[in-house]
Length: 208
Image (cartoon, helix red, strand yellow):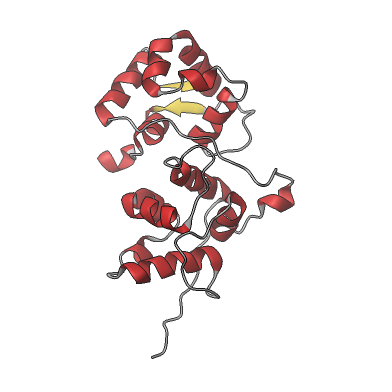
């Protein structure tokens, strides 16, 4: 039998690849590293993440083995068979899906992304957004962090209180929410779409 040639999925931006990598790492234990199996489980649970990486078609294949092979080939090429425990570094992941080599940019490798806070129910996330924004449509990121520190009952509910007590806490929150490694732009807006996507994993655009 002649095997079907598999084309690599279209590349995405480095920012989007980095965001998806962070999202897939969210369920890992502290110090854990992403594996092929963890990627498969994460993409099968989130059509939004799979769509971002242009892998929806691969994940619609009827057989699990074929779905796994398609994703594995997107990550590592076609030279080897899928192996569930194959580890995937951030550099490999971002390079595979964005064609951007983080190592050549002078970024520290290896890099362990911060662990995301627990996913919230949608209704609770909307309630907390209203509480922290006080009727505003959005907050600049620096102001968002300032209010989290001021209103500890809200940061507690969002699972961020302990993180904000660490020296890197504010930087980690910025990186996770905005999918960006450069955390110096404190004017980045935190609106309802950004807030809901981060704390619930849902896309408000798909709710309309």
